[in-house]
Amino acid sequence: MTRKIILDVDTGSDDAVAIMLAALHPAIDLVAVCSVKGNQPLSSTTENSKRVLDLVHSDVPLYQGCKESFVREASPWRIKFEDRATIVDEEGKEHFIHEDFDMLPPSTRKIEDVPAPVFYVDYLKKAKEPVTIVAVGPLTNIATALSIDPDIKENIEELVLMGGADDEANASSSAEFNFFNDPESAQKVFQSGIKKITLCPLDVTHKAMVTKDDCRRFAEIGTPAAMFAVAMCEKRIEVHTQRQPLTLPDACALHDPLCVAYLIDPTVLTDVRYLHLDISLSGLTDGATIIDHRYFQDNRNVYIAYDGDRKKFVDIMCDAFRLSK
Ligand code: RIB
Ligand code: CA
Image (cartoon, rainbow, N blue to C red; front, side, top):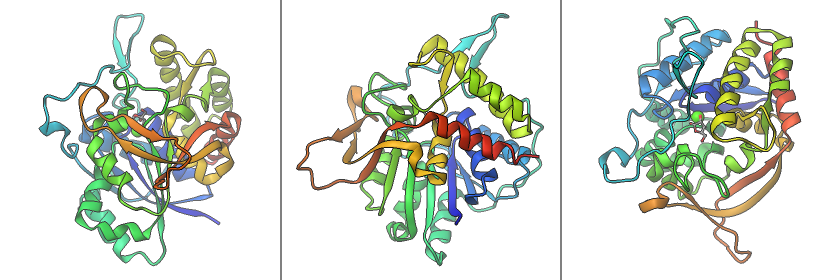
């Protein structure tokens, strides 16, 4: 049985791998890709998404989404993003962990002529069967669609998210990048009443790592998708080594494809807890996840993954990359 999904991305090095995994793996039926501002301005996340879809010869429709977060841009007094995760190479050139995909040919692919939030509303209102949404950037498109028509939630089978952190942070001292960039949208989504939300926060993505040895496995596969994944991971490993070392040496977090891998094989997430989560909307903790671990909590709204099987994760990606031509 294949799982029908819509993928919402701010492409982005790890988003790119999520797109390739979703487009190539036979267990996934990719209905559409939606772009959103996040790792880069919207024009770049859209163009990067187009190039990656071209690379894997996918003709899935691409909808361009929101250019700005829900209200963050209107609140200039809020705390700023602290770390652009850059490194300087031997020639003194600065590299960002998420750059324009200049190594891929420019795309002539057309984007669809309705904006992503409108697509969500139209699609979900008409859908004969519920669909799963995987959102791995700021949640602006999803929150906007829910604002237009909250009833669309009835046709969302599951919402799988990359974002937040319980015991980690990367955008500020307490917040993860995706939720930090649009905290109001994230809070709206968690309060929406969507039947099932599964969250892959930094706690699990920093454990389900990809190492240099895994890159060698991808390189042996040698297909276009595998080689592009090698390029993305090698840069990420460099940035992690210099700025955010993980528990294994020569390793990186590859956050976004873990959400897709979970839909292919749920046992890739090994410690999943049903809890209540809110998003901080002000001050030094802006965008941080507030997770209620109290056992008597009776308002649980999200399944949160705390650990994962990194070997299984890499195997799943290898299976998909072998199918790239
Ligand atoms: O914090 C990690 C997340 O932020 C990932 O989705 C990455 O692509 C960036 O958007
Ligand atoms: Ca992302």
